[in-house]
Structure formats: structure tokens, C-alpha cells
Length: 490
Ligand code: BG6
Image (cartoon, rainbow, N blue to C red; front, side, top):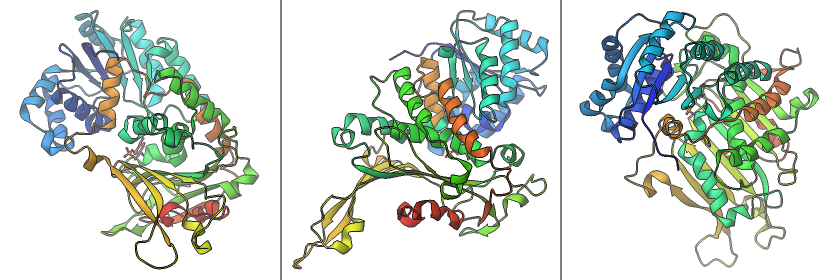
């Protein structure tokens, strides 16, 4: 395991939402746990002409809002603020990079971590300017925030532009889902437990569901989201990363490339979905106004910042197939949407039924094992097994029973780090296994582009669903056609 060394953490877009809500709070948490190496500095860059004191003032207010109450304390805050320097930087202005270069040169040999928390269209310019002002050294790393491009072509262009100045081993492409505890637990569960390892294939698994449901809407990001949609915002990255981790072959070891080689294989083997098959396999939706338990929620086109009537999808359900020996004939039902009934991220692996059933034939349908991996709101793993209903009746009646491992209860007192906190720490240490390699991103885009290329045709339907629901009723079709239903029948 690499050891953390003193690092200059340079954040582009330091006044943005991501920096204020996720990056600074994550640095705070690392600071609190004394994980930021001695001598590390945090250099915050943004367009506004303010000084460090003013920046720190705003940062403190936001930290108080976004750090968990029981973690917040003045002493840690002071330590973090003491590391921060603010520099005004306009992406195209040479003299601003001179100011940055001057500061970096004060600690010439220090490891550098450039965090591009800006729109990806600027990644090329920033990289080129950093090179021009000799800010890129052998010891530096660059973190690229998602979404990386709009499609495969734009993503390749950005990768090329950054790749002109940074080697692939220096590039850390973020998918914050890879920083979540359960996602890493998936590796442990699959590859440290022979009981699952031996069953993880089409002989024993009938189908897999992956759901990422969000109760929130667009959260003031309408103009960004409207150009992206749920397919680019959630499927191309988070959902396909989860799918790749569930479906990949065992890596030879835990090194970044062993894991990523296996993930790439899965992404390459995803079966393209032809337009004629989309009716059975893809459902898009957009939320209309609706109620959650508390209030009346506006429809997507009436959200703050909405401009006109848009046909951008806020919900996607897909029946995916992986064309290889392990998964032949096993559908992966994927589903993600905004403004759904509740926040729920869950992977459900459905095992096949017994080949011969000796109990009440009426119970045959309930009698299969299910492995449920919960990522949100609570992290945990549970296994649905069949047991006998207690009692002295003559027939053995079976009933599904849950073997439950709730991480919060089981590991009481052990704090689960936030995704960004873990990921930042891994970059400081130089571990790339929780980051996405260029070819992974590009294969994921290829599969999604192929589906989306038909979405401007008149035959493409956008189904409305009420905010606060489980998405369009049509999303049931892709699973019901296979005589199945979503787990919990959502
Ligand atoms: C982001 C998307 O990547 O992930 C957001 O851009 C989405 O639209 C968010 O809300 C969901 O993340 P999480 O960790 O809350 O599930």
C-alpha cells in the first residue's frame, strides 16, 4: 500500500458547488483524522477577485453546513483553513497561472494533485496552460470530474487533450460511486467468499437488478442537466460501473489494472440494443408534477431555471445483456430516475430456482435465493433464504427469511468515510483502483451512444411519471415481459 506524502492539492473551480459541498468537507474529514500529510497545502482557484481571508470565510460557513455535526470542531477547521491559499484564476489568463506557478515553485519537489472541479470543456485548456507554465512535474496527479464529455467522441477529445500533458498513470477519473463502502464490499463479497464465487454465473443466477433511485429533482442544475439527461448523468457512469463490478471476472490481484482490465471486458461485451429492440428493452421517462409525503412537487419543466418545454429524460430503465460465457441468457435490469418515491441504491442478484421442487408447488415462485446489496440509504448486504414456517402443521410450508448484515449495526462505532473523502485520500496515496481508466469510459460511451442515437426519432417515446413515484408504469414492461417483477415490486 502506498504511503501518503505531503501534497499540494490544487482545486480548479474552488467556488463551485462540488468544491463547497464535497471537496472541502472531505478535506476537513481527512484533516480531522490526521490523514492529510504534514506540509500539505490546499490551493483554491476560481474567477472571483477575492483574497484568501474572504474565501476562507465563505468556506467556513459552508463547512459548518456540510460537515456532520458530531465531526465539526473549531480546532480542525483552523488547521484546514491554515493550509488554504486562494488565487484568482481565469482559465485563459496567463498571468494567473504565473501566480499559481510561483506558489507551487516554493515547494518544487512536493507532490501535486490538480483537481479539475470544472466543466470538462476546460480540461484541455487548463492542462495546456499548466504545461506552459511548467507546473506539471513527474510527481503530479490530475483528477477529472465527471461527466467526461457528452458522447464517446467528445470524451475522447478531452482525454486526448489531457493526455498530451499527463500520462495515464497520472490521471484519476472520478466516479464517486466507486468510493462508496458497499461497492468495495462487493469485491470482498464476491472474491473472498467461495460460496458466492462458485455460484456467480448463468448456471446459478437468473437475473440481476440494479436500481439507483433518487428522491431529489434537479437541485438548481437544470441548465447542466437538460443537456445531459439521466442516461449521461447516471447510466453511462455510476450504473455501468456497478454493473461492471457485479459482472466482471475475478481479477488476478487488487491492482488497479487487474480490476480495470476485467471491468473493461464486461463493458465491451454489453450487447448493443438496436432501435427496433428498444421498445422491449429501454424505457425513458420525465417527471411531471406530483406529491411526495410532504408537498406538491413541480414537474421537470417547471423546475427552477427551466427554459421552455424540454424532452430530456429524467428516468431510464434498460434490459441489458452481456455476451459472454458467464452471463449468457442472464438479463441485467437497470433503472435510475430523479424524483422517485425514495432514495434507494440497490443491487439484487436473483439466484435460480431448484431444478426439482419438493414443497408446495404454489410456493415455487417465491423459492429462490436473492442477494441484496444496499448502497443507500443504509449500507448493507442481506441474503434471502427459504426456511420452514414455524409450527406443527403437517406440510412443510416455506417462507423467505432474511439474513441481514447492516454495516451501521455490525460495525457500530466505525465511521464509514464519505466517497469523496476516500477517493481524495487514494489519489494522495497514488492508488488508481477506484478510478476509471480511459478505455472503460469510452466503451461505456459507445454502448450508451448507440442507444441514444435514436432518441430524436419520432418513434422514441418519453413517458411522463408523477414526481414522487417509482417512474413510468411502462418501466414495468421490460421486466414483466420476462415474467418477473422489480424486487419489492417498485
Ligand atoms: C451525480 C449526478 O454524479 O450523482 C447527480 O450528477 C446525482 O445528478 C448524484 O444526483 C447522485 O449521487 P449520490 O451519491 O447522492 O447517489
